[in-house]
Amino acid sequence: MRTVGGARKEKTERGPVILDLPVGTGATGRRIESDSLGEVDVPADHYWGAQTERSFIHFSIGGDQMPKELYRAYAYVKKAAALVNAAERLLPQWKAELIARVADEVIAGKLDSEFPLFVWQTGSGTQSNMNLNEVISNRAIQLVGGKLGSKQPIHPNDDVNMSQSTNDTFPTAMHIATVLEFSDRLIPAVSELRDVMWSKAQKWAEVVKLGRTHLQDATPLTIGQEWSGYAVQLTNALESVRQSILGLYQLAIGGTAVGTGVNAPPDFGEKTAREIAEFTGHSFVSAPNKFASMGGQGAMVAASAALRSLAVALMKIANDLRWLGSGPRAGIHELILPSNEPGSSIMPGKVNPTQEEAMMMVCIQVIGEDNAVTLAGSQGNFELNTMCPVIIKNVLHSARILGDACIKFRKYGIEGIELDSARIEKYVNESLMLVTALSPVIGYDKAAAIAHRALQENTTLRHAALKEGVSAEEFDRLVDPKKMVGNPRRDLRLD
Image 1 (cartoon, rainbow, N blue to C red):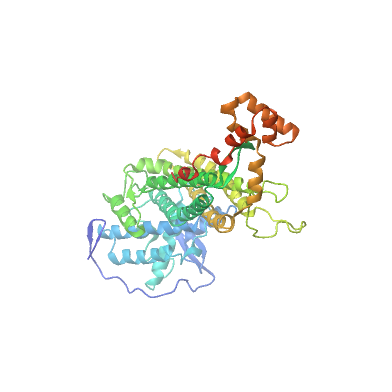
Image 2: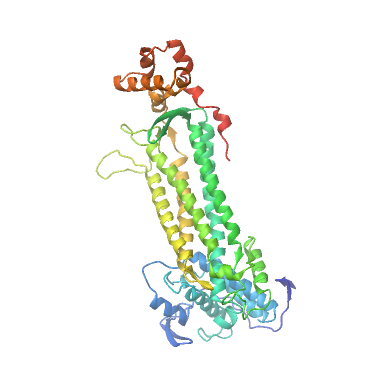
């Protein structure tokens, strides 16, 4: 016997034989399905039913489909709910196992083509919930040799949706999908990028370069120090993403329609959340206050904000590298960026900072999508936020493109970067801001006069200093770029 949600699960009746049938209806043409509004023609080569077809007709707006990752996450909810319902003696065990079997097919992506619905639907996600319920129902019916569309022996509402409402299950699926996307793809991708940047910082820890503030020359630092700043910005952004997951662990499941748990057994949310945690390996729990988790979408807004913070850091880094690699003759060109492809259809030999530009565009998109999520999160009316589809679409899309962009940026933009050592040394030697080292000895005003004179006369800082009465010995003792960068090895901290 297996313990499910704290209760002992036993077979109460022997179900029909489950057939080993491949995915696919094997039919052509149309068939008749029905819902509470009547009969609807649906394509016979798909498993979805009447409510899916109605939504497909009414809400085919643009090309924005609900993310397949959401349906896979949703299937965890259906599987867990079925097993808990069986443990509560509300659903025969064979039905629960059949629903769980089809849910596993959904989780594995085997039924992705059965989820065609668009983002722009009812704000609770009812159409997507029923899309999944209908697909699980008909696939289950097929596996026991029944008639598709008959709703027998597995009913989409009475069985697959038992003890549930869209209002608690859709937000639950949103949280699961986001946690899986963050954990499985985004965090590893950003971590690997950060690690490569940190290794570059260590490699170039003592290479002195010209600093820049306000796009103007500043005192020197080392390339390692500069890159350590990039690595720590990513570390901080990663921590924000990880912290946002903690809020996502709280699931709305068990609240049903308005948070009270009507039509669900006591502790259904807690038991189902434990099952979901077991299936996914993540620390999901039932939210202690379902009214907050259904009426608001604070955890998703926070997750989106974490993605925005990551995008801001990546934008700064990519833009810096784009400028530092500019040239090769008339730009800064301290960095030699990898040459990935020809950069112009008319200018032979031109190579552009394409990975940096791609990353910047991704960051712009993510920041824009966060604005949409923020506004949508503010639209919780009474007991339900009815902007859920646009929230999950934008959060999952932002996480996916950020993760993918980090992988490409690391492989084709960061790993192969080299230094233009001669250019770096030239900028340091010609810098007028080295005069800062003289200021504590000769005073700010005299040091400023030396810098202005060198610039106006187009001469070296040393030459101008000697003209202003600084001795050669004093200048050479004080103006040493390597003494102006602090302790590069000590400064390299990844915190």
